[in-house]
Length: 120
Figure 1 (tube, rainbow, N blue to C red):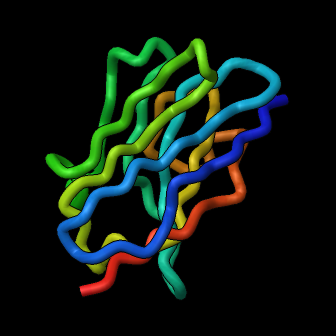
Figure 2: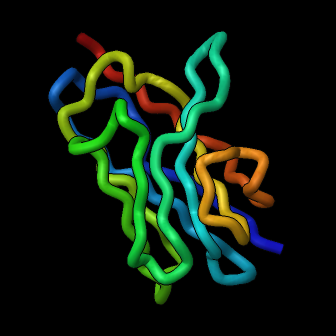
């Protein structure tokens, strides 16, 4: 069992940066993904990182602006978000699972989410 806790969200202006953290208790994080869900919309893939941390992937909408990384000694995965846009506003979730995937259904463990709001 893995319990995930996200933090680092907040209210920022367009162009600002935020760094989200996802810390695990219990087992070590496996492949980990970040997803986001805006009001009235489906939960969308944002970024992923494999178990070893050597392979990463991003949604086209965040490529070049967001960076995912992990620190296994801290059982943590981070999402550095730069040049934030109002359309990045959403609840951000981290998820861990055995598959390096963009599909939410492939992840077994989820955090409670952290709100990111970007004002124009």
